[in-house]
Length: 354
Image (cartoon, rainbow, N blue to C red; front, side):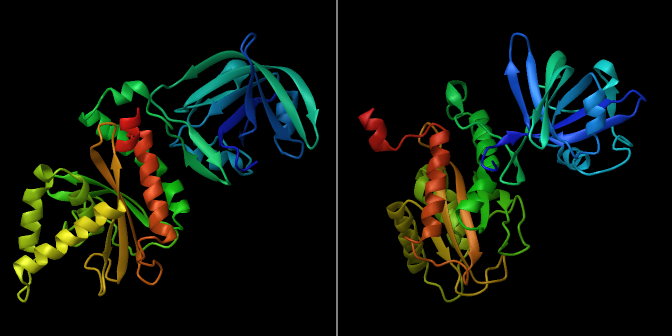
């Protein structure tokens, strides 16, 4: 059942003595549109069960994605769960929790036995939702965020506009926790090409963070980082060349030969084009993470075929094999390709066939 992703609700009621009760539940479902019926189920051993059993009214408060603390609060036992809680009175006096994604005020119309639970059937008498809020999700034993699998025709019509790029960031950001699981709990970074080059806009540190030095807004080296090499490989030279030349100049060392350094960088870029993702290894301590690291970076393309994001992975060298064909970089490349697909991108061969 943990693989069945659900929303999160807090169901509330008021007993005959005027006491308020609330319990967190994801056992909630729509039943009928005409008449408007819903159901939810509660454990017979729940301390609040007598209140819900005897009351004629209850409210389904659908949690917004910023209400994890509210959900956790009502999931625990307590005498007065509404102390300090912001709410108003709904039908039958049942509490309506403020700032929810939506709420359904219901009259109980039937009760059915369900093993160690009881199933309450309610008719919706009043409802309200906040279109600007996003619902909280739950699955595999933890809270999640929900995002659109397909941006749809309206978003794709935005083309190369800034709004489309912002939507791409939203979709990719929401997917980071799941991608982190797929690649084996290595530190992930989402980066854009900013006015000074590759810029970190979001980190997903994982259960094995590469270091504590994960700064949003950090501008990475184009020449030395996997992210910089990925952008150079897949962005048009007209976009990247000026900053590449500047970074080559700034990264010069006293004993460096300018031409040799440039040729090495161009070889890294060509490797990235050939493999579909970029790689960087640090034989010594990374200037950012202060430990030896290996990193890979994969491009994310929009519907126009333009690289809009880099999905990068960094790990201590002792935890990540630098092999191009390893399971971790291949999983990263697959995740980036999937994100590109969600943004409407079709590889050239597919577009030609279409």
